[in-house]
View 1 (cartoon, one colour):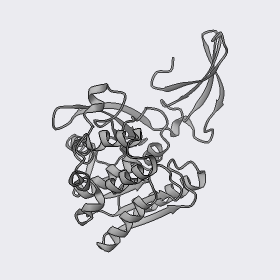
View 2 (cartoon, helix red, strand yellow):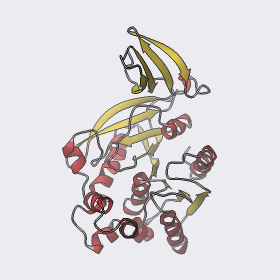
View 3 (cartoon, helix red, strand yellow):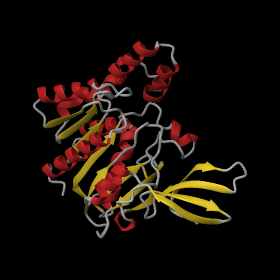
View 4 (cartoon, one colour):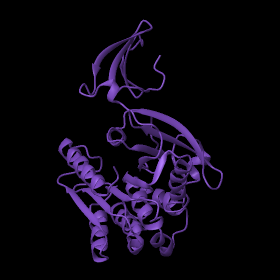
Length: 318
């Protein structure tokens, strides 16, 4: 009944005769529905000011990475534009052990509304595609996980769907790290870089967690497995930290960070900004007052979008 939608149960009666569902995707920016007696009825719109015709289509596709691994991917297509030589936004998800869904992604939909093809690769290390796909990401920060993003761009350029000279990478949290890693380790791929609450200095992040939780805490053990996969030598972590490869960066960088981020410390972006300024690189830093890790404050979300819009136009992405 709801093909192409993301569906979540919000509430239900004890006998399941009435179920309240939240759906989005497939032409919907979010709706609450009642399921009763085999029928669906509309209760409310989550975003009443966004009409169905304004919601961009999300397509599922798959490509083969350079080592033969299949990478599921979501493409959000700009309305009324042919899928030919488009400017594109690569948008790696956070986590990194997470995944993107076909539901209404406010940031992907925003970019699409501005005429960009949005590419969301479910790179190795993503959840939801089997244990093997998840574990292949262990120890591959800045390496094969980054290659998966590059391979997505190269595939779409080769197919004529993306303009190779107008590709920007935008990410938050781990996605912010991936954006900065793209700037530092594959500097010829991207025209511009946006890191939102992203990690720049992995050793400092891990050391901060060890001080906060203790060296034997599960959080520290988890990060050791995911980021380094047992390679705990300082050299490994230093090499995959974008802050140590600032000299390689060619494209302009926009850093956005909430001052009260309790997941990725504010100093991660602050330090990256200082290093880039010292190296005479093009960098802009937007500090979000009282901002948290998830841009929950509507004013901060609007401020971030305004900064993104200005930055993309300035870098001639449109």
